[in-house]
Length: 85
Image 1 (tube, one colour):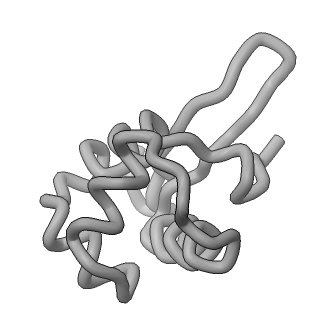
Image 2 (tube, helix red, strand yellow):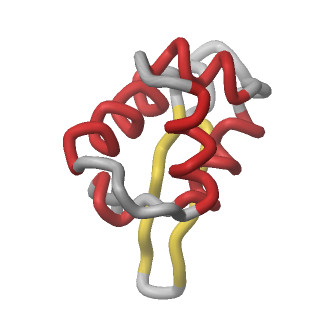
């Protein structure tokens, strides 16, 4: 099942950034936030508004990332492109 934005944690964002091979600066640009905001999210700092978190999650999802949650844990996957096998 797809995770709700409020279920996404900093470690998930860091893993998603790794899957996309994005730097913090690239992620910040894609998400429309500052580099420090990406860093704070990844470090687990509180203080980000629910809207900012949702915007960040949406930007990653628009680039093929899926934040998932299951009965046995949560994680991040990168959608396979339709022509890749």
